Amino acid sequence: MIKNKKIKGIIIALVVIAILVGIIIFLFWGKDDEVTFVEEYTPQEEISMEQERQTIVSIYYNNKETNTLMPEARLIDVKELAKNPYTMLLNLVISEPKSDKLETVIPEGTQIINVEVKQDTAYVNLSSEFIKNHKGGAENEAKTVYAIVNTLTELNEINSVRILIEGEENKSFTDEQINFKENFVRLD
Image (cartoon, rainbow, N blue to C red; front, side, top):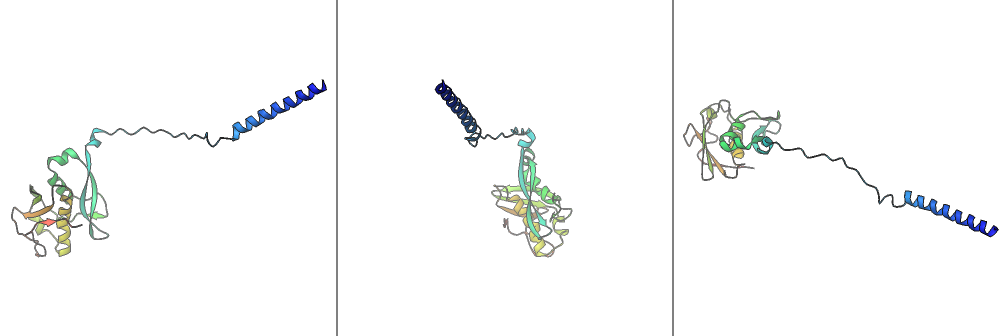
């Protein structure tokens, strides 16, 4: 009997030890392998029809701090852009920028008479206010011209711009620093 009690005691002790080892293994061993991260699922926002029809264009303005031309990104409706892209972009160049750090370089009162594209050149016909109301100086005149040129040449089909004043070629700003005898190509 004593042997049986000892054997029973040893078996019970071994079973208790086995259970404790099993619990310890279950709790600590392999815990790193079983770590799961729960991420919160956020469904994608649906894109509205209006958002699908929008594109980003670059409009060039003068940076007040650096006194250089700088693009400003604008989100515009593709359907509106498709109607008359050249006039729409020029109207944006004439208008005030969204950023307070930028300013338009197109003289006040300038009107777009029309824009025609022949081959890869945009012929931009502007009102006489473009030259009459300009403050002058070669640097300012260059920024004015290249605000137009850089904006229009963002379009793949335009490689150069010819500026006409009231339908006439070979005009220049009043101080004659820059004239419009040649096509202007993009300067980066």
